Length: 139
Image 1: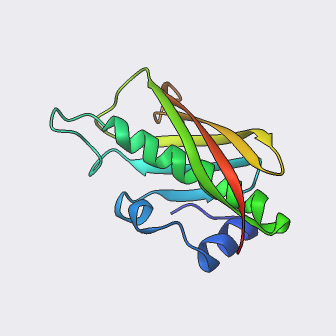
Image 2: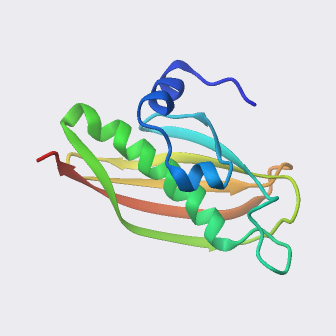
């Protein structure tokens, strides 16, 4: 297990990452509005032919992008909901970990856009994901 910074631990202790992230054993290592990271094991997240399922990349990407968007939205009195996600898978793995780095492209008052790059343990790009979140007022 990787040591987490204070903001990451506070967010995970307070709000959590959700059941799907727990099921897929995603480990969040850094969380902030503009830069977040996580890792996910290949084991347990593979499709029948033995490689990591493309949807698993999307789950780790959406998890990071949505958490980052919600960290940005919270001080604005809002919460984030995903409205678009796309992914391009360029390499596959069957062992090791998917390492995901999320960076903000746009942090606005009503919308956020994040790009997530997934790499293998050797730093080779596996997938590139972009997620757009709409920021809604709490009612």
